[in-house]
Length: 79
Image (tube, rainbow, N blue to C red; front, top):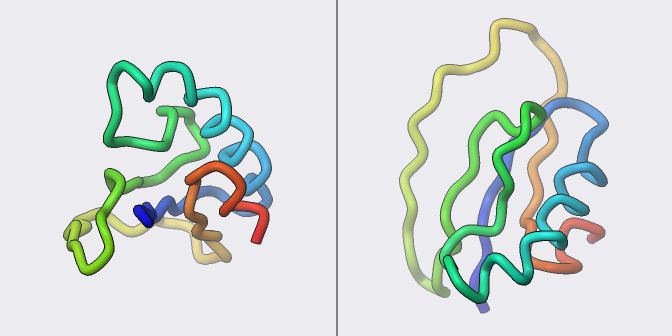
């Protein structure tokens, strides 16, 4: 099963997860991503196949804090 990795602002897992669910129809056409570009998302990978890789390069946030990460494949963000 494919997964992805999304890092976002503190406390917005549900916002990111719900945004991903709303992409289901768009994905039928565009495919290969499960993360809508919203301000709360710091960085996201494409969907990655099992045993696959997707390197991430990012500038770390200036503020120290907790930055949650989730997989936004439908339903995964809840767990």
